[in-house]
Length: 374
Image (cartoon, rainbow, N blue to C red; front, side, top):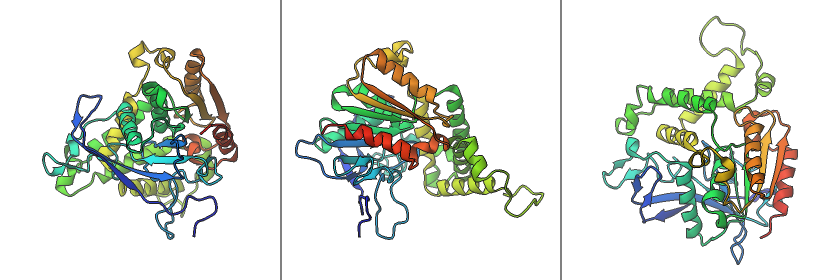
């Protein structure tokens, strides 16, 4: 039985591409798969399609459940569905697992047809530009020439921005949420520490751990623990955990504070679900993205061919992708006399706020999307 406002039971699909794909690095993938899900109905003239671009550890499973007993709906289920802000009565929504991902799309865990073994360390390093290129091929596969909107938070927001730069005629609206035009040095530093935790794990084996039947679990745990610290605001961490102890001081180095239990749980959970080579490549794509680089660091010049209308959203407590970074995008769009709406949402959850069912935030999205013509 379908729950109220839910897209209900969903299933992943696979699009196979036989033509070679040349990546920004110059590497070539001879063929590849993209795993995706869709919600809602594509209208007759195919003008109501909305692409959701995921963040670092996201997947194609954006909304709905895989069975009636499934306890975990898609990662943006609070946003997408009948009469939700991204209304599937109106829009045909597409979620895709990025190329290089570890949830079905071709990546390091996939079999390299040339060797018969997993790609492992030989899988190329990808960029945001490569993801957007592959996403256009998925749109072609679905017969969609122009998207009503591209929506993404964090790394997903970078992809939405890149869509408007690389394929200006193929997207009418871009919703860039909790994102930035590039990473700060501090953000790149966090990524490097996380990568080093993985690379220096004795079980990493230079990226070819599959052949050894092991997983660099310790490195993945530390990488995820570090990430979670940056995703939450200080206020939320204090409110949720503070300095609370589980059982009193034990005078040991085992987990004693509730914060420690939380971080270890998140690290263990992630290490059991995510691929280390994928994590390395996702964070490197974040580091590399800088559309202004080819324009003498002039973002306004980089956006000069953009045609889409924009909604840019930031959150006051997000210190990893601060509101100031969103305002850089807004200024560059306005410099090109483009139509842009900007909202800075007061929220306590830090960077993770873009995933939360905050009423004010959702009403902003609802209002904007209700005016998108299909």
